[in-house]
Image (cartoon, rainbow, N blue to C red; front, side, top):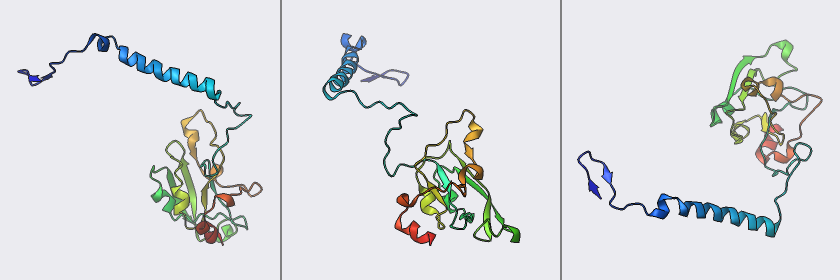
Length: 185
């Protein structure tokens, strides 16, 4: 290598003709394509699923749509402690705490509750840190898919989409750790 008067590095080695017309790169790409074609012929084509009629099988620990759980009496478990928001590496969770009134005693377990609880699903990385951080076992990631939306604002899920319905309880016992099962009791 030699330096020119403008401090640019100039290589003494010139490109070969094969490198100039990209032959090695072309053959490498064709080799990869040929390898996949042979694999398809020998092993058969990979499974194709007619989604949404047939869904691809997912692992048992797959993390999907969030749910804010209720207790056995139908009251929200979340006490707005904020640990899930602090634990979230993507900073996707925001909440506003409020104190319950005497009339709301049958709606919330503790004196404090989340009057606003939002998860920005565009920021969420589905890591599960929120459910691990929750001392009340109030939030879980279910095995359900997040709905497809066409508007960015629709991906900010509030309590209307997160809190489970009283008549449509979501069973998460298979996903709970022993620590979470003991915290519910």
